Structure formats: structure tokens, C-alpha cells
Length: 140
Image (cartoon, rainbow, N blue to C red):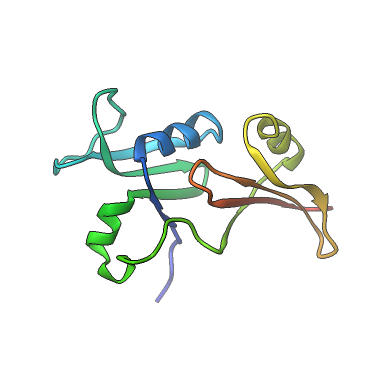
């Protein structure tokens, strides 16, 4: 038995806005998107459509976004929960200084780039839905 990968599924208010943030600010690529009230998969956003679901990737990192009300329908256990989370999503990167420089003027930095006592160089941002994303690189 083998676990292959973990792909977080974020509850979001607006899938299209989230896709644009991850694409334009963080450099992710849209893998697929599902329009609301349609059982089809598309590979690009259309201006006049509303979306329920999207999957995006950057290198080996994959994320999914599900519109908040659809997630609550699919997972009744989450019906009374609020969007956002008290957890962090941590992304290992190469050349953290370049990643930081490319984002610092485009996003809300919630923890500045620093060297840690445990051998990492890292920083944290807030995405367009309030989720906290950490970026880290082993500090050699």
C-alpha cells in the first residue's frame, strides 16, 4: 500500500476569483474547472460563467477549490462551519528569495521572510480567501 499525494480542497466563496489569484499572483496553472449547474469539465475560464470547482497546479503542488455552498452540500458535516481554517498550508520551494521577491508587493505578507532555528528560510502570506500559505526552503 502506498499514499501517492495530498491535494488540499479549499472551500471558497468565488472559484473564478480564486483561480485568477492563484494564476496571476502565485503562477499556478488551471488544470480543470467545472461550471455551475453543468456536469462538464473545461480547461479554461469563460468571462460570463460561474464555477463550482477548479483544480490548479504549480510544479508538484496541486490544489482544488470548491464553492462554499457546494462543499456543504457534498459534505453535510461541514454545513455549519465557516470558510477559512485555523491551519496553514506549507509549500516547499526552490529559490525562496526569488519567490518572496515575486510576491511581496502583490499579496498580504503575514510573516516576513526569515531564517528559523529549525533550518528553514520561510515566509507566510494570506490568499484571497483568507487562507494562510507558507513558503519554505531548507536554509543551507
